[in-house]
Image 1 (cartoon, helix red, strand yellow):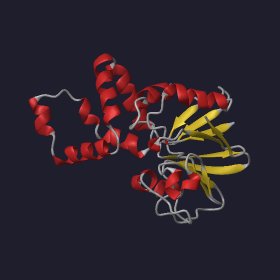
Image 2 (cartoon, helix red, strand yellow):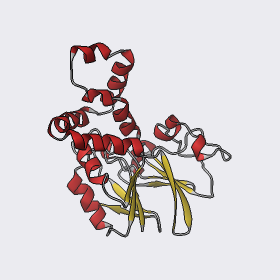
Image 3 (tube, helix red, strand yellow):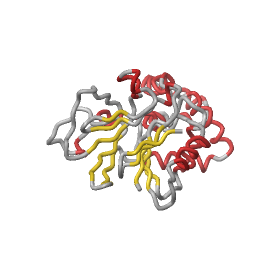
Image 4 (cartoon, one colour):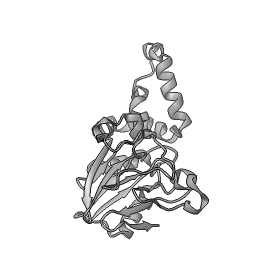
Length: 234
């Protein structure tokens, strides 16, 4: 079976494992994590550490992981030379990340940099290797998996032609349609943003499924089994 989850945002690792257990997820199954594992909650780095050595779990990069990579300079030792290197570009990148809930992640990075710098290096390498999208066939249906859908969608546009911003920061309108040849599965925008009736659960249209149930808004994550599009909740 093939599953997808998105926007864990530092959700407690124990809760995430409980969700997998509820779905009966096992070593023979495969899980796509559609980005935004970190920030807002306290367990983002712990979750990444758990995911990175699992051969049956694939992380798709989210905009929060992209911000973490863009601000990787925070691991440098704070010396006079480093402070002088903090130009407007770096300060702007850091300000954007902080505005998006980075404080718990930065704190965890600082702790890991002191206690287990090698592990922190593995986590950064893991994020650098994470793709912006993936495709899979499950239950005789084709799926495109991204963090934020397909910004600037066009039927003739190849996946490799979408920009980072179109795949990481897009927020499709409820009426927006993608190709009927496949389902696009993504997160990034909590489903409650489309209406209170969608809060805390997946939002399904004819061509796409948003599985950001709203952990960033205080909800619990949900898991989607692609084979039959069954939803699992804590």
